[in-house]
Length: 114
Image (cartoon, rainbow, N blue to C red; front, side, top):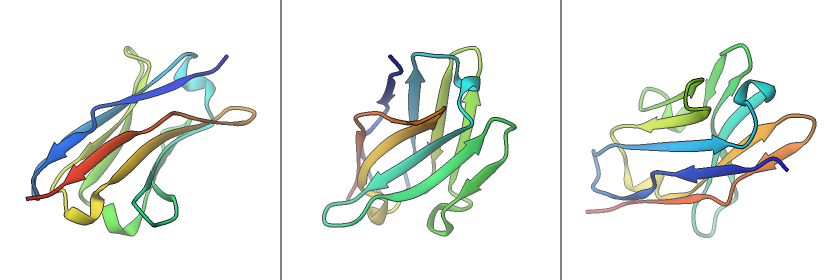
């Protein structure tokens, strides 16, 4: 069974940084696409960033220049480095992987507040 497990969420002040990680139960290069989505209270889930098997990346306009998605082969993880965080980044962040079907983790909460 394929599992994705997120970690790294927490509380941070505006302007701060957090690094989210998603550990997969299978080789991450088995996924055609790995992505981070987020869902804020009362809002729909939205794509934050994605990375293809070939390493191409794509970001939501709201996070461009602040967030970086990357894969770590040695740790078999996909990470989301989040810098210059804003209050509007507060949400539950989910890891998604596409490998024949879509797999999703349980999410990790990020709270940005002063």
